[in-house]
Length: 121
Image (cartoon, rainbow, N blue to C red):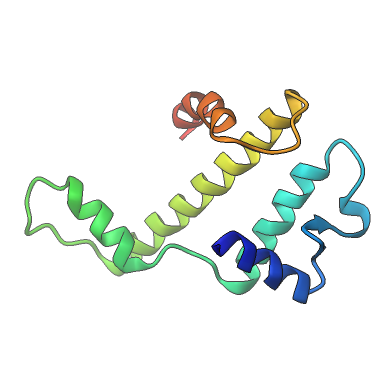
């Protein structure tokens, strides 16, 4: 449902039409990667990011001492790192799907790129 709402929002902003990218973004082999970059740009435009509360909870799940505190700067830095990681995973998954001549990215493409992604981070 959220994906459909996101596509509707993109259509209202003139970014895509009928779920497909408009203009120079459609029709060639690198279209999927350019669409991903367009979505990343849109995410940055609307300020899409991980909430500090979520990042804090994720970090505290792995702390041994419950009294450990995390500064606001550290939370912002971690949120930005998570955002970069997620975007990079999406782009690499798209490239993998293109290499396999698939029109849609599935979990299998993410599973194939994840080991190298984790090593790179």
